[in-house]
Image 1 (cartoon, helix red, strand yellow):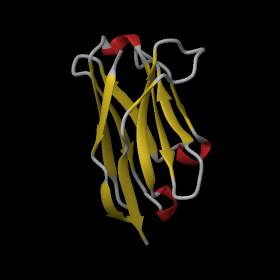
Image 2: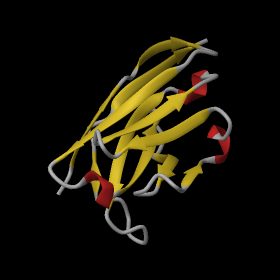
Image 3: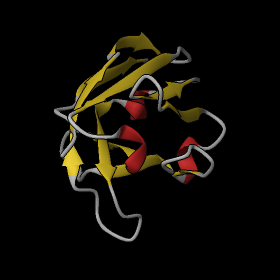
Image 4: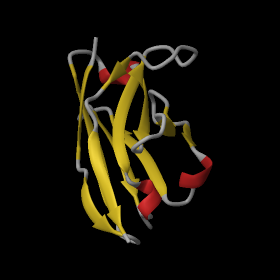
Length: 119
């Protein structure tokens, strides 16, 4: 079982950047495919990006392509989400998630980190 902790959220102006981190512990990090999700007020949780266990395959939600970059460092048990050109509609709580089978739903979730983008 893996424990996940997000960090790096905060308040930023539109057009600015933030880098979120997800720290993993309790299990072999490289066993897991990882993902970022977000939940805005009054909305359902939505997929942001994912990365395979090796880092070789990444996927993005359409609205994040070209602005967000997901990466991971298996030696440090860390995953990142670099967010550039932020927009007010990116305001949400961002969650990292892990799964040990790419054909299954994400099994493990962090507690979330708030990102607020002001206009």
